Length: 199
Image 1 (cartoon, rainbow, N blue to C red):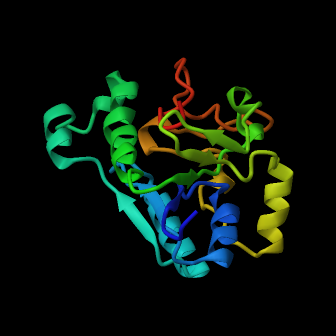
Image 2 (image 1 turned 120 degrees about the horizontal axis):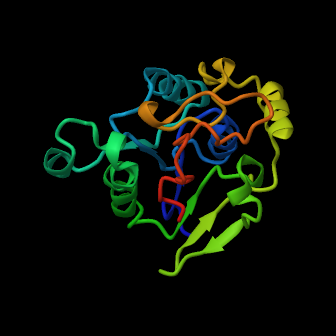
């Protein structure tokens, strides 16, 4: 695959540093797409900047929702409270669909150990449009990721120490109890388990 035709999508969440470090070793200019929803924890934005500097990443792109669509569909920034699916579509799915147009493949940090809904996640997922989604850490578990972060002396997301094991937008993310599904704090109390970019 030609250089520049593969991108990496990262949330800069609690487990993101390992994949980003691996990518930086190969090519620090790899395009890294970060969905800047306008609803992130300040800690996530600070962590993103810290990891970029620590790893020497030069290709990170903040992907924003269309301002006209925000004004039309979520002018008060409260769509998450009454229609989280619509909020994710507006702030994540639609911007990413546009951002990945130039790429033949995109890399994600998803893992089978993250949730029961991801238990059979393949490493390579052919997409209906002929592109590929690649999940290089699909088989990694939390202990392996933790050990690799320690081995590489990677900075940790500041919210991880507060019980946040999977971090998305601030209004829809909460800490989880020890031993719980790592993604149990995402859209807690709702049937929703994914934002839509991986459905």
